[in-house]
Length: 170
Image (cartoon, one colour):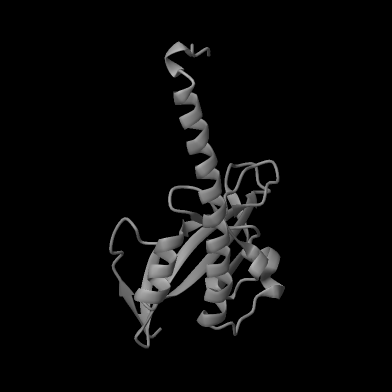
């Protein structure tokens, strides 16, 4: 098929498998989406820094592979695959991306690939994506910084107020 498989290099890898196609690195992150509305299905992707490193330093193309599945219509406990969607991460609609405050910032998806399929901007450049994503990241980190400063002040006031006399109650 014209590709060369690549070994997964380590813990901070953002993809589940990768290959080279015409000397271009493609990393594929496999997502499973439980279509049962009563079950939790996470939209977590990777850390902000790891994504930017992969795109900028490794010059990689980050692909999302999504399997939508539901309970099987048969009596066994298997799952039926309802759809499979594959899209470049940088082409997803702008409102699909969000960053949560987990460690250094965790990139998450607001929607499944299937939900935004008709809105994907297949020709979006990396430059256009990075304009969107970097603005999102800066906004996130400014908010996190403000929250951290409030917490620091609160703890300092607590300490200055004599925490030795504080009794912790469960």
